[in-house]
Image (cartoon, rainbow, N blue to C red):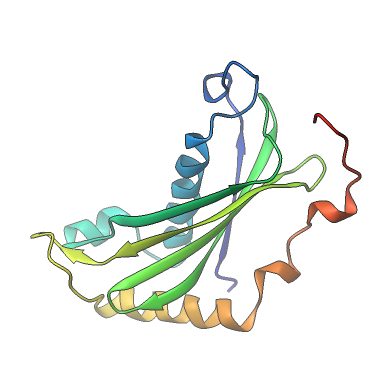
Length: 159
């Protein structure tokens, strides 16, 4: 099983700004969509983790914007686990326009594992083993080899 999550979304009008491009904070929301779907693909949900007393607050987020997404674009949110320690997870994301394969943005989020008391703790049981396997898979299969990058698509100024 590949431990890369791919989720397709369509840009909604409400996600765009006055310049008719997607407002920057929406990319972080899309990152969360990718992350949630990756966990689901690994066999569990955030809700299950919370019920088991584990939370994953974001402690760092980065996003590099390469090309604008616009209203009604169909986009692909690609996510994989880039780094894993028992009390820290780092996810990597790519937002790709499906029509032309152009890489629109890429980024990372870092999460610490905390208990219900908000004190740092360690992953346990099924979470530890599933995330460890996903991290090992990510090290063996570089995402860059599977991503259709914009270099193959002619660029046009102003688009």
